Structures are given as structure tokens and as C-alpha cells.
Length: 291
Image 1 (cartoon, one colour):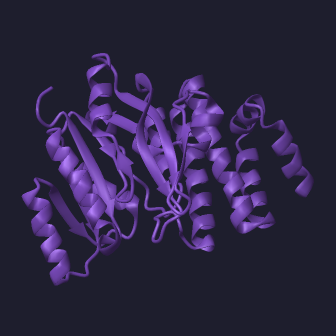
Image 2 (image 1 turned 135 degrees about the horizontal axis):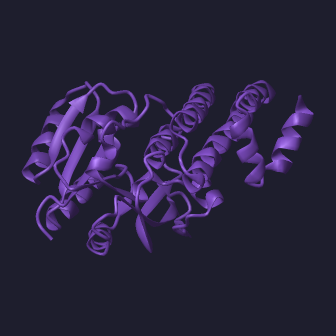
């Protein structure tokens, strides 16, 4: 395997909290001849941060600094710096297994454009872990997309970028890619350990902002389907992610947000029919009753 076969993009929102783990990620990338791109989402320079920058660069990382205010926009900045044939996205607070990513690439076919594997969820506050298997089942992929367990051939990302959302940007990004009919490679091995239950986690956004962005993401996913008309397999996965976001509106906005979400889907009959065919009849009857 030649150098720069893989570029790893890691956005960092809270350098003071996660920098030690970022060092570990960068050192691991250096050991496997992987390009490490660290995107610092901050404009608050300090002597400590300057010291961190020097250490990161000495370890071989490409460092990008900007006021992005969202992991999606930070990842977009990282994509522009990527030199690898393949690209993946890791979080600053998790534990990936770089050698397994590289092995997945080695074992892929020449026309493969998207690889995804299993991952485990580690609860930091309880020191417990559970595995989430790689699956092409609609329910599994939609409920647990896990962006960091995907490996993308770089040309697949042409003309695709992350939306400026605090929540749901991963689903919208994947929906765009699914609409391009990528050639899949599934790896059942655990590629990544995702940490939850710790201070400063990116997903711990205010409820009102979460609900607003969930609704925006749901709308964008519906537009992707209408614009691209992907084949049945990808259409089901895209729609399922949109439906998951709609149910998120129910949790975060209450009745009003859910009715708005249902109205959006119902106004597009093809989407609503597909939802019915995907086994969501019980949920839809329940939501209809709420109206």
C-alpha cells in the first residue's frame, strides 16, 4: 500500500478537552502512513493552542484553523486538503482502528467507491461497550449511520459537501452519496469505537437548535430523493434516515414539529408511499391520530 492511500479528517471543537486524544490519533496515522488532517474549529488562539499546533505539525498532521461553528463545515474544510485516494471522518474523542481501515481498502474491489464496517459504542461514564454491526438493512443503517465507520473514495465526494447543521448533517451527506449509486463493500469487523456520555460531546446541542436542524435535514433528504430518484435500495435507506429525523422532531419539538414533519412527507406522495412500503404503517397511523 502506497503513501496517502487514506486521508483522515478530524474536526476539533474543544482543543483543551480533546487534544491528548487527537495526539493519539495523529500518531497512529503517522505510523500507518495515513494523512491526518486536524481541523480546529476555533478562533481563540492561546499559547497552549500554539504549542499544540507545533506538536501536531511535528507529528506530520495537516492543521486547518477556522471559525466554522459546526462539524460539517469543519469537515468540508478538511476535504479540500485531502490528498488520499480514500477519505474517512473521525471524531476527536473516539478510538478508531487505523489498521482495519487500511485492511478494508486493501480488500476492496477496484470499482468499490464506498466501504463501511461495524463499530462499537463505549459509554465513558460507565466503562461499558456494545457493538453495532455493519448491515445493509434499512432499519440498521438509518438508525445508526455512524459516519466514521464509512470510507469514501475521494471522487465520490465530488460536488458533495456537509450542510451547515448542528444535527442531521451526517444523514444529509450520506443521502447525497447514496443518490449517486456507489459501489458498496461491507466489512463486518469493528473499525471504530464511538464514545458517549462525556463532557463537551458534539451531539449535546440545545434542544431547540436540534429540532430546527432535524427538520431542515429531513427536508433536504426529501429534496434529494425527488431530484435524483435513486434506485430502490438507496431510496429506502435515504427515506429511512429522513423518517428517523422526523421522529426526532417529535421528541424535540413535540406535537407541532411532528405534524409539520408528517405534512412534509404527505405532500410528496411518492415518499409517503415508500414509507408505507418500508414497514412504518404503525408509526404513520399513530401520527395521523395525533392530527
